Image (cartoon, rainbow, N blue to C red; front, side, top):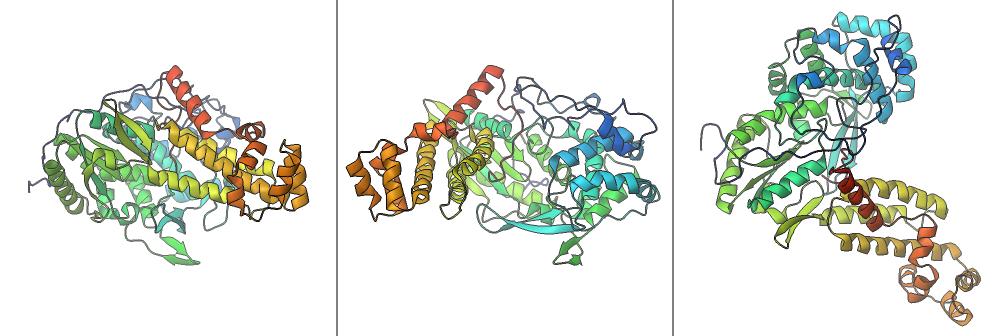
Length: 519
């Protein structure tokens, strides 16, 4: 094994990723807000966000280079002198407040909501600022929340207090300009102007270039395993303001609240904190540059890493080398059960898969993402939930709009048509149960154009809801047009509209969307 711990392997296409004209939207850019320069000098910092004007987000067609932004692109200079003052500046705090209020989220252990943050700051900011300047501020522990993982098990999230969210967001805004220019072009997660779609497209290009094998590296509980000393050493490479370093360290050491009991944390950076995504990219930046130095094309989205190589033997060597580097240099763990080597078309990425057709590589919907969608739709269309149909369809519309905005990248219209038919059948069985009594069923079937004798026959049927929902009779009574008139927009139609918009706008994605069930 080479000293660096990463095998050279046998791969091709080691050059950096091709540049594309990305598309940015409301969530792109460092903050998407005004600098608050018009705010009166005598106003407290939190009021800058009240008086200021929000910058209109770039139109979907606006282009932005994938090249890491230069220092001039950001609102603060890319140097650590006066970092503390930049962190606590009126403009930076105003932008952070707007971002926290816009993101919303659940309250932390103190129960304070985002709506209560601004009144709290009006009353308590002088004391908060004094404690920060005097180095006596102590972050509150985060509230531990567990959510089920799509593949089984649970994911542990940390919910900070809204005050700590506000301060962490302000920290992230001044730290990003210091680190962003040096991040790898092949890192796509939690970065301005980058998206999951761009990561998927980069992976597709690697496969098109003949790299038929992929090394799938799964970092075991990455956010829970990060060693604080190793992380802080990497932060200190570009940050020399000791006050900033101490505050970051205190956030790492703040602990968690579990069942009302504070528990210390010796390692990890909690998912859910505004600062954690940036710290994750800082921690994994060494791995990115080592892979670049070795000439391995790769795609990384947060802790999701794929390395593309030309042969199975090369893939096995790269997996061994990456594992050694991660465990020895980064002091992290690789989950050997989930990591592995496979044909590039057999390993999905961020909810998408790949297939070859007509000599080109296309994007498809990963089967796991399809199963997760159906599970969610079963919940929304459960006949046991007594919800009026207009309300049910409104909830479906909100969910499907977000789902389609992410998965419309898949080039599999037949899959969307199949899902649409399945969803309509689910809704037909809900409607059948709503009619309940045979007399009501007969009356409604006749009103919808079914002959009286046939309506009477089916109204008295003892067949189950699902079986009746798939019958030709109910299909004629409640055709596709019936649901369209009620406002149900098919997934296939949504996907076509979005893809046409992206094509005419000259961009791949209108805004960087991250679907919660994709990873």
